[in-house]
Image (cartoon, rainbow over the protein chains, first blue to last red):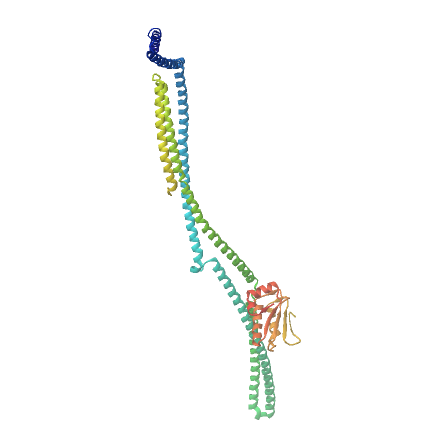
Length: 396
Length: 101
């Protein structure tokens, strides 16, 4: 302002000098020089005036509502700070909760997978045992159901063979017995012939006795002989009778023998037939069961390693917990950065005597610092995670 | 008659037909039906189409007949047995010893 005033005086003085020169001296060179200096001076003054007017405007604007601005800034920043702090707190709490939930769930799933794997291993061992048993039992001990049925079948066949053979032998015995009966009958015929002889002898002896009586005293001795012969013939007739009785007893015994041989020969085949049918039915059944068991066992042996594999995949997939935890930790770090900013914002209200400008500058620098830190940690984190993806880490 | 035996006109076949029951009571008749036949190279046909019941003595009798047939170089055919009789014959594994038709 003072400069402008001085300039104005100086330019008036210069104009006076130019006037004096024009009226009294008429010196051309001086006129030009003075005029040039005046011109420069006026230019400088004009620019000074422009500057001053600008400054004046600014001052006017600044002085228009300075108190209101500070208050608003404080208010806004306070609200902002409260808002950020509340949101950040909620996010932190939720993060903690998610972390805990994931960790709990993963522990549970991991335990259950381990248990499942154990059970699957056990099952596989049992299947192996079953497989080896079903394969070796027949060879070692001959006690499998199949061989038992085959053996039983064979025994039954043998039994049938024995029955038929017995029948055949009995029938042959029967033939011999019949022949024997025929023989007995011919013995009876012979016996009756012997009986005829005896009666003839008896008659002869009687005749001899009669002739002896006729001879008188001389035939006495002969009569005794004739009598003896007669008694002999009677004895032989009695003997014949005895033989006939004995042979008849023999015939009775043969009749009994015939009965027992008949019983021996005639076995009812119905029960054997039923047994045989049951046996063949059982055989088919055993074969079916065997085939089915073998098929099932084989299927199981295929399924078991698949279960183990699936469980393994499940367990490996549980690594996501680690990655999730890392992500959550990173988010927590970011949240703490926001906290830092929020803390700086909080100082606005407390230190109202410090100029807003200074506080803003402080806020700006803190923001820059936090931004840089966050960016750095983010860069290192993404590098780490990239490595994690590439590496095959078995955590469980 | 529970058993009939008939020689064919050409003299090459002898048919022995059995009634409903084929058991021990027939053994004498059965034996008489063939024992006197001593012709060689005869075909013996045991006709069982009427027979419903058969016990083990019948099987024994058939075996004796088989022995007789073999002795005279003949052939034994069991003709048209019922299902039950066929099963009994199969249990006795007669199908291995003679023809069952």
